[in-house]
Image (tube, rainbow, N blue to C red):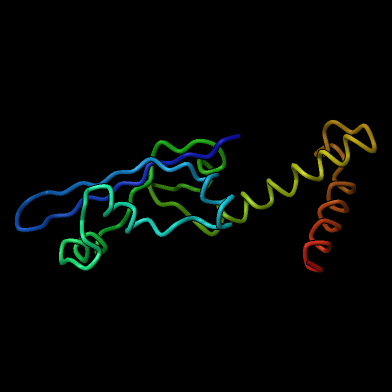
Amino acid sequence: MSNYITASVEFFFKGEKITASIELDLDQHMHSSGKLPRLYPLLASSINLDLYSYEYEMMQAENIIYSNAKGLATEHIIEGVLDAAAFENSWHESKQLEICQKIANKYLSINELQQHPELKNALLEAYRQGMKTL
C-alpha cells in the first residue's frame, strides 16, 4: 500500500496571500531516512522562498494542513492535522509485519498472519530483538 499526502500552508505577507502546497510520497521518505521530512523547508522550496527570509518566518507561524491522504496516512489525520509520530510508528510496524508475513508464508504456509495473533506477536518480537543486536 502506498502512502501519499498533500501538505499545504497559507499565510499573508505584505497584504498578499501566499499558498504553498506539495504532494509527498511518504514511503520514499520513510525508506530513505526512517522518518518524515521537515515540511516547512519543502513547502518554502516549492514557492522559491529563501529559508532565511521574513516570508519564511511568517510561513512557519502557520500550521500545515494535510489532505488527500492515501494508505496508512489516512488513519493519522484528524481535522487536517497529521500525527507524524503515530504515522511513523505505524509505518515501521507495517513493514515489520510484511517481513513476518513472508516468513510465516514461506515456512508455515500461513497466508494471513493476522489470524494467528500469538504467532504474529512471536515473529514480531523475534524480528525486533534481532534488530536490537545489529
